[in-house]
Image (cartoon, rainbow, N blue to C red; front, side, top):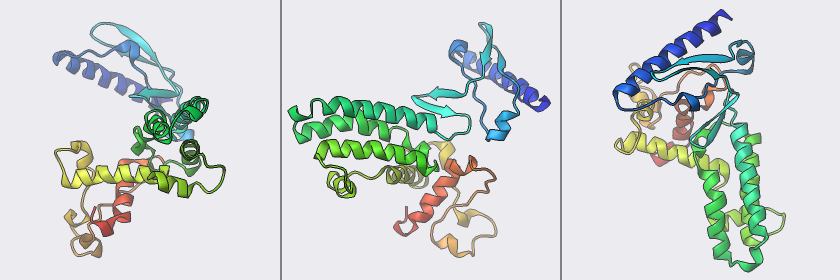
Length: 254
């Protein structure tokens, strides 16, 4: 209890400093739209007793409620970063659009249907999908079911092996799309620093640049430094996932 209160106090002080910095740079921290979300494992979150955070800005003082989920740029984050709520939202919207298109499918050509599916469904599956790296397969299968239904809507295929349909549409499965997006980020971090975010590029540390590892065989294969993780949440981070992708594609020099 004492630790959670101390963490709340430190967080409030950080927000106050952030508000001061934003004011000096012509920006404003909107306290009415500010949300606070605790991140951690289930047993860690169960120990928290703080339900509100005192938020003091240059314009007003208010109490911010602790939320179980928070919306950040259209992505719904939960306290354990399982992304279950975000995936449920994408699946719900995807199946709704599929039902809407099914009602007019007979009036559309195959190309028109494919264009509509790309605009209303595929774009939802692809949006910020790199944050789903490391998410449990049981959740990713739900997204795959949306893609399969969309492929059947275009091709008119019945419930059978969907792989040939995806191949004919040149669609990567959901899991491979996530790997591809992560691989692109890693490639930009290593080879195109102008297109990559600096904070991501700093996480991609080549193994040969670490003292004492220059003589290892891994240094010649272009692998990156493997971080040490202690929780399942940290194993879903970009620092951990980019190593897996780099090792998976080391033969392609990515």
